[in-house]
Length: 228
Image (cartoon, rainbow, N blue to C red; front, side, top):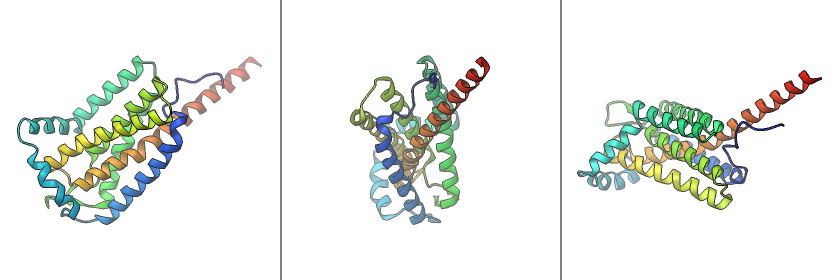
């Protein structure tokens, strides 16, 4: 290998821990999906959380929640993705730019597929609710930004893992609070969306690195054959 088109988006020091987290998150997504498949009413845990969260959305917090919700809508999400990709390119992190696009697409696509598989609805009007796509998207974006920061600042295993998990928690909690408070999702939908991002993003980052390395190797081999 003669070089890389930018640093790895999944730092080697984080791979063991994030691999474990990915597996656990996937198990939670599947377990909740099976538990609430076909349901149209909140579960016991959902009922404990829904009303206190809704009560917290008095102005001006309701406006904050609406702004958060907008960031998960197509226009808001596209704006965030474009801004993130632009930042990656300005920092000369082409792999990170690819990860943002691929990670966002894979996360939203996975959440959409799971919605149809689980068939859980809310408000009795047929709106599929599990898992929360809004929560999955913002958590995924927070994870990808944290991975970029970990690589750029050369954080070790402990600091990098803590940063990634903290970013995921903050992003997921903020969007989850808005979704539950606005009545768009049940709390367990939010948990499912959060875990969806935790399962998808590390796996996507690993695939981006593998593909980029393969392209570098192939280009290097082609160059060597031309010089012979």
